[in-house]
Image 1 (cartoon, rainbow, N blue to C red):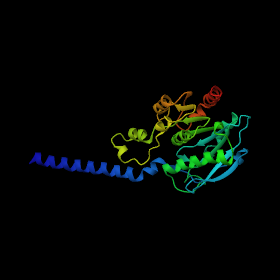
Image 2 (cartoon, rainbow, N blue to C red):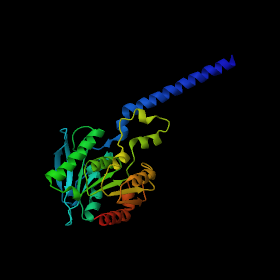
Image 3 (tube, rainbow, N blue to C red):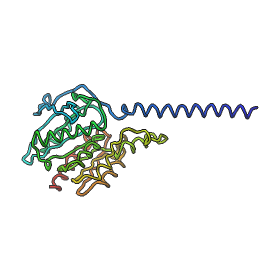
Image 4 (cartoon, one colour):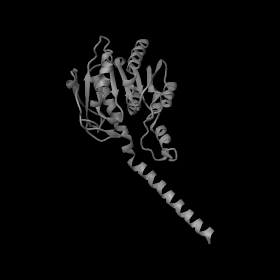
Length: 277
């Protein structure tokens, strides 16, 4: 009797554990969008309030979504411009200091919000972010008449996947991958090792796969202290990147490494651009 009772309790516990595991997987499957995107709608400041000259731009994605961005013209004669794809959180108003970093070394910047972020319309989706990046490229090359050989596509964190996708579709001056991951699946499989993420993951953002098709100089920037996107992701991206390429190792967290290692970051960019001219 005692053995039968223990076995019954064991079966009950096993059933509860299986039910909890199944419920957890369902939650991940149905709510994974909330794990991918953390958009902010409110614009917390503007470049004008910080004394910067810029143009407030509205343009349309190919599927009709109205998008918003800020354009800062180049400050030197080379006329090189960074098309900046930000990460999965906040909006363009959180990246003004990053824009200033590029401008301080003579680069122009076009930073835009994906659909569902800031003043851009629509709702977030992976395909949508690619449409939006393509629309930003088109605005620079068609509306602004900037030669592709003068455009540097830069992407930070999730924006790295979007930037790599765009770079494989065109031939830019260069591609910058900053604290980028190899793929969403690789990140998710580490944070949820007991979940078969590949079977229900709707978001791919396969940076590494896109990078293999890029035909432009590549700069990879990553912090050894990054716990959000571990350092190994940057190392793998660098190993897969075509030549010429450069790796800049920073110190500091996923978000703050660009401030904490500001001199290493800016000098590394200048050296890379000079060596690939």
